[in-house]
Image 1 (cartoon, rainbow, N blue to C red):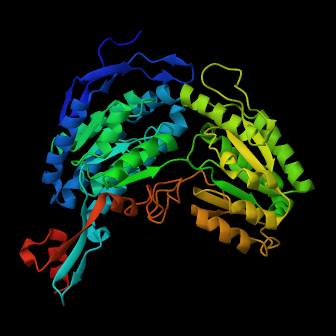
Image 2 (image 1 turned 180 degrees about the vertical axis):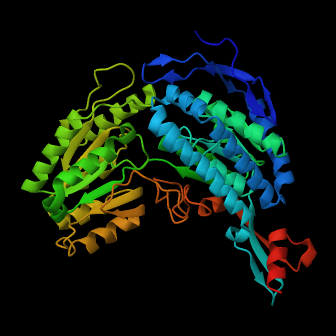
Image 3 (image 1 turned 45 degrees about the vertical axis):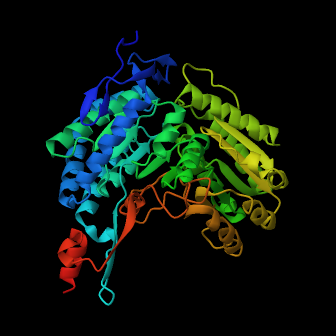
Length: 514
């Protein structure tokens, strides 16, 4: 039975009832049944009030020392740690992911670590790249950009959550307040995270509008929000359709928006690798492609192979593995519908079904593990449709005639987050590797060798970005601190400004350089 009163929103440091347009409930995807909690879709007046509160918080935070930002981020991390089981259990109900190890022992641990890494970066202002030109008496430095709207995705309810994930941590560590839009698939999880964030903000004396949460808004209000003059920037992780709608609105008024949208993450398996360790690669691909029911932005959805007896044996073994592996739970009914539509588009474009391509015979939202195949010639003829993202447990194998056709096919690949090349360890593929890598590396943000792309380490060297349409801008990453923090800054220049009037980071740089 549904609750009768919608959950309150967090605006200007207060939990209060929303100005409700309508209400919604999340589903339990493992059963397909609605969960009882009721959540509001807010009227524009809620968003307007939140933007004003964020603008006021930004003024208070503009010259806030890194020690203060770090104190809040660490306090928030501690509160998440203290409520780990409750958070993981709530997220499990709304996503179908297991409490352990996926949520409590992996994703929440990563979320907490990101917050603590962001706190450490806030303490070291070198990431702001201060520059002093004594000859001209001109200084420059990266400064906070302003209130930041963060839209989290459905597939990572914790580590990419709008009120707790990587974009949130980076924006706050850079000195900006965050207005988070909850995902409709896991609103109760967002609410619980926001409670922890709010408690940490109060305990550390942060301005009231530092962290705010709205559960839902009309589509036109979302585009209005990202183009509002009070907003400094926005970050979005999700579908290409929704991301491009927000991008058009933000671009129209020159507002920065950082998008992570769709990626099929091509994996190239060269002939020598198949001859050397086909069984091993089958296992690695199956594990990666079906992990989390394929609902990872780095899921290997497109595999290139050179035709031959070894390739046929590989595809046969892969199909058997897919068919024998359990079908995981998809995140929502919409995810299942989108997967079905994506597979249909790929099949209509010329692909044949090797296994799967139908709903799973079980309760809840589930789809049979799906393997499709197409020739290299067909891929070159219809590359756009054949790169449709079938978000979930589905993989398309492209079988080319030779390495020459392989390079030709790769030139038709869109921008992706990752690209991977498997080659023989004994060097027999080395003559083909340079030509393949030369094409692939320009189309991906992260190039891997002999390793599936699913894992995204929170490392200063990580690039979780890539050419369009994987992201909205190839220069930025959403994972890896402090690089991800620079998205939420602007370059500020001070010309002939007296030293004592400069921002602290520039004063310190001047003093240290004597």
